[in-house]
Length: 261
Image (cartoon, rainbow, N blue to C red; front, side, top):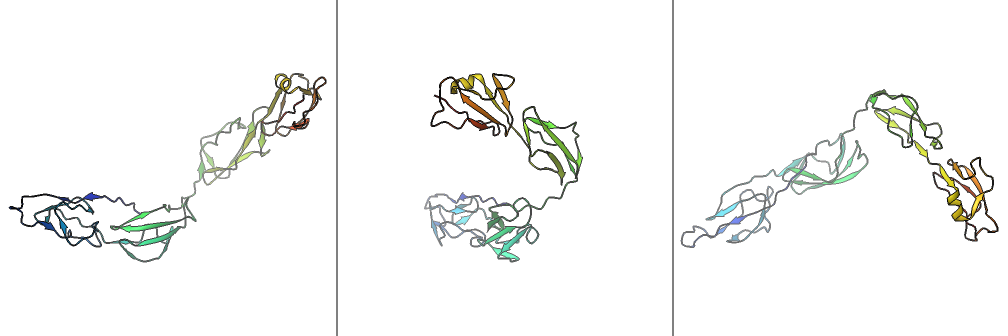
């Protein structure tokens, strides 16, 4: 389906001395109608009148100094029947005819659009692209944030080949057995490294809490995704009525801490 570029120009009328003018008005330009529609559409235009037209033309002594001819119909859009379903489906469409169409292939498969025939060209709302041919190879596997492939990588992989990923220390793979596989030139399956939570002494002091079961490092702990940590109030403070419970879980780098007052 070819794109359409519509040029709007003004018909320019030239004022001439009445004594030398052969004709003081112009009729419709040659080729008006299906090929070009003057706006406003009149039978006669006086000196000084302006109209929207297919291109620039000048009225001189009752004659147009340039004739622009346009195509008065459109053939079926490119890709009809193979990647487009047309409504109505005809071999020829007149200027101004509108169609509804659906995409049968490509990235817009299943989408619907509209098109209008203008001077032999189709103006459309979406493009129905051809289905791309499957690729036999993939390039290097994609980068994983906070992780990497297990082992080296190559510049080219055959369809069906897989690579395994690992995460940095304290990060957890999601899904746990994380492979990406080359399929038709694309690496399939999303993989994420879930973030750990860090709880340190300074942060707990602001909440008036401490670990109920202290780790080996009394002042700091790294909790991986899914880990549960139990806290308790320090000194004679008590859990605030608006606080979360003492037992909290690390969820992808986020852990809500209880507050004692």
